[in-house]
Length: 344
Image (cartoon, rainbow, N blue to C red; front, side, top):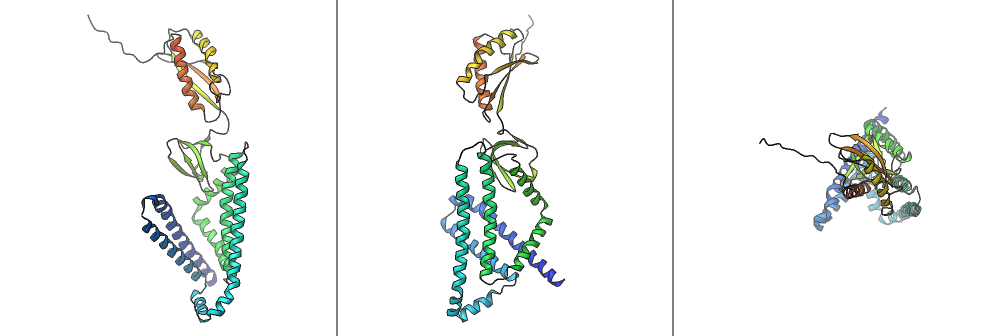
């Protein structure tokens, strides 16, 4: 019972240190890195020095928590400098080989995925998305295995650390259910192909291009350049405009006094010529007819099938051309007017 309690306390202290490091690097990333162009070089050097001390102190603290006595090792190394260095040479070589192998594997996987994504295909965006997430997962796996291997080479018993990782996972699972929900949702978003990097989506009323997909979050940038970050567990509903071709729709009105058949015939004859000047159009524009009888106008609709994400530009071009054609045919487009009668 006492051993289990100690193991639980060790895991709890480890979680607190990891969270502290996460907070430190979050502050560094969002406040220092984001403004490094406006910060003096001396201050940046001071920040990196402080980060190095915090990281080193955290590692030493973690080793102490898991029962590795650094002071004894340093004392033995100082007392037996020559012998200690001689004994450490194989460990140093083993550590360097482990790092070299880990970096080589990461580089091979990264280059392989990059070469794979250079080939254009109908599934290019999906391959790019899965490759990005897979590389991120592989990076953390290889880093964890390399760290444990190097610790084992230097004689540290990694058994308690592995057991601690299991308990740490249990603690995180119980205390961060929303985080786990985001990860599971991200997994299904990626592998069920809800959307990919480069797709144009609408999430909760925010419309833009997907710039990055992770297991926890999705980043979307709208046409203004604003980037919004969504937790994957909260993405519901989502509309993807890039899966299939789009339909450009233009509604307009003509006056009640005008000849509806004349207007429809004229537009049906002249609007198809636009297809030769707009390669985004996959078919000729079609006049559907009357859609609504408004208080001062007879509303009509023109539609055309276009390539994905081009419907807005085509709609603007259609409105312009319809206005020009109606003017040429002397067909009135009604607008609000106020008639004032003055008593004689």
